[in-house]
Length: 426
Image: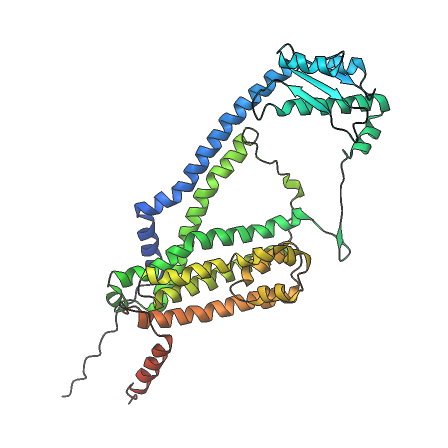
C-alpha cells in the first residue's frame, strides 16, 4: 500500500481586519502619538484662552470709553463742523491751534483737532495725550467720525452721505450656463476636500513612511512575511493610517468647533452665514474622488519609498522633496485661478504628484471641466494602484534589505529568475 506524501501546509495568513486592528492599536497606544496629537489642540486652547481674556478686557475698556466721552477741543478752518455736533461728542472750540496744542501738552485736555480749510487735500492735525500704542488710535477715529457726522448734517441726507463715502451694500448675482452660480458659497464646500487632503497628508505621511520602515529597522520583517501576505500588510497599514488620521482630525477640530459654537464673539471669530453656502453634488463628488485618489497615490509612493530605503534617515532625503511637491501649485495659484488653461496649469493638473492639489483648486472655483475631472481622477487611481503594486513588490524583496538601498531593477531580475526556476507542474 502506497501512502500519499503529506502536503505542506501553507503559512497562515492574517485577514485584513486583524492587520488594521493591530496597526491602529499599536499606533494609538504610543505616548508620543497622543503627545503629538494633543499638542496642537492644547496650544490652540491656550491661544483661545488668551484671546478670550484679552477681548474681555478690551470690551470692558471699550465700554468704559463709551461711558466716558473723549474731552477734546478743535479749530475748524473748513467751516464744515457745526458747534452742536462737536458738543454732542464732547468737543469745544479752541481760540487757536497754538492754544489747543498747548492745553494738550499741559494735560488740561485729552486731545485737540485742527481741521484744515480743505480736508480732501490737507491733513487733519491731531494732538493727544499718550494712551499707549493701541489706544492712541482712538484720536484719529474720533476726528474722522466728527468730520463724517458734520458732513452728513451739512448734506442733510444719510443716503447721499453713504453714497459719496462708498459706504453702501452690494449684492452680486452671477450666472453660469444660464443658471445662477453660487459664488464663493459654492466654492467653499469643494475646497474643504483640499483642506482635508493637506491635513491627512501632513499628519500621516511621516507615520506611513515609518510604518513600513519600523519592522525593517527592528529586523522582524522576515518573520512577519512568513505568516502574512505583503499585499494584506500594505493595504492594512494604509487603512489603519486613514483611521488614525480621522482620530487626529477630530481631535484638532474639536477646539475650533467648541470655540466657534460657544465663544465666537469673545474670540473675534468671523461670523459665517451658512445660508450662503451652496452644496452642489457634482463638485462635491469630484472633490471626494480627487481626495481619495490623491491619498491613494501618495500613500502608495510613501510605501514604495519605505520598501526601498533601509532606514528613516535615508528615506528622509526623498521624503522632503516629495512633500514639497504638494505645495508647488500654490506658487502659481494666481495663474491657476485666472488662466486655468495655460500650459503650466495643464502640466500641474495632469502631473500625478501635483494633480490632486491643482485639480481640487480648479474644482472648487469651477474651472475644472467634466472631461478634465474624469481624466484626472482616473489617472490618480490608476497610477496610485500601479505604484501600490510596485510598493508591494518592493516590500517583498526589500523588507530584509537592512544595509543599503534596494535596487528596483534587481528585484525584477530576481523575480524573473525565480519564475524560470519554478518547477513545472506534473
